[in-house]
Length: 64
Ligand SMILES: [Cu+2]
Image (cartoon, rainbow, N blue to C red; front, side, top):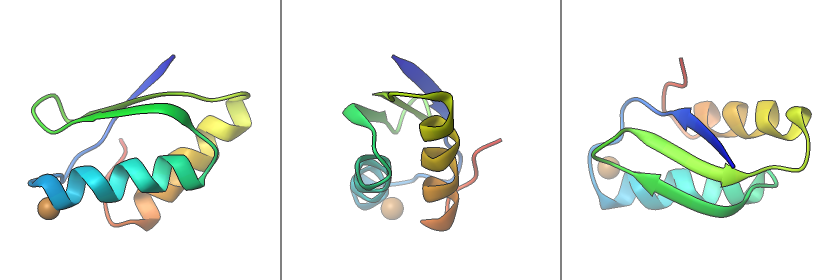
């Protein structure tokens, strides 16, 4: 499992948008916590993790 910080999520819509961005970029077993400001998922390769981070950024959130 990989956990990344996601800044800028404020509501259920954000949680869903981030979940979908992670899935669309190749992540599975996706779980997003608004409270923690984190997304946890399984990614096959480090390249996929990078792709996921960029997908979340493209969705409008900050991944530090
Ligand atoms: Cu929101």
